[in-house]
Length: 334
Image (tube, rainbow, N blue to C red; front, side, top):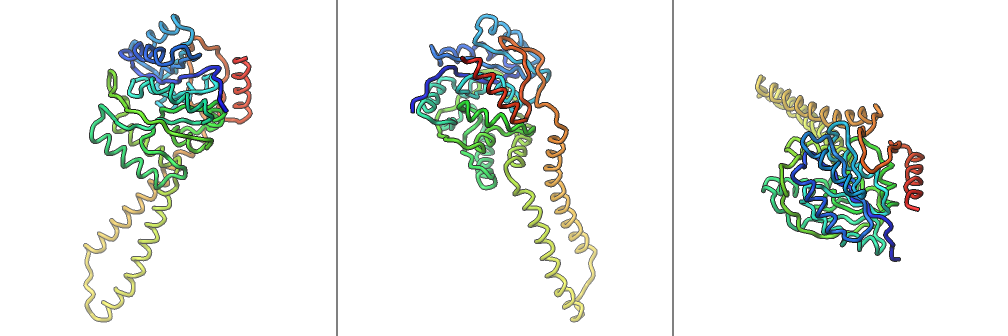
């Protein structure tokens, strides 16, 4: 089966990318050539000249669709906003810092034409990244491979293409602590990889600080694994087992007259057990906090402006709303 492309949507979040926005647009237009496409850019609360540049690009090219969020909601939320508004029958997620080259998109599209529903890009080389970033990324993927309840591919980020059917399934998932690469693996469908060499950032500084990387990693683990809770349970059983072993030993020393009471032993035992309990409570707290976020039912993001896009209600979680949104997209393509 050879798929025919009606419209390709390229979704890109931006945050303070005034030095990159125009170059990114030129690279996307050059890479896609005569293909029918739209470039859906989400301004995630930029405070520099990025909004003005995006408005200028949208005014000069109606294929550029701009969504402006009311504040910074985060990378994953910004991508979600773009996916919600994408109208194509194939949709590509890509960062706007040009580390992920738009020139790879035609190769991903070729796999889609062959019938693959999800095409994810796997990094062969990671130029411009520190040794610390590469090592921590390597260990993170190893950890997630062992812990996750879905199969995740190492060195595959958010740069990927989804068929409309797969995207509609993804949009039904409205959880707040989003890990899109894991969610994309969770929905299933036919998936394949395309290799590429990742470039260094074109300009500016990365928005993923160490703190945000740790937060993102916690979201990934908590969203797709119960292993931390199971570890807390195992630690509890281990402490109980050691305590039970210590009872006959203490009785034996008492009978033999060798028992020497010591404050240090008691203090160490209390600190050990207290530390394990706090770790367990912390693990449970991470999951409870995520439950609390979901129960509040707040929208994932708030839109304050659009360019070349009609204002409309965006699905926020109910399957019926997702179906209505899909119907609206299909009618717009006719």
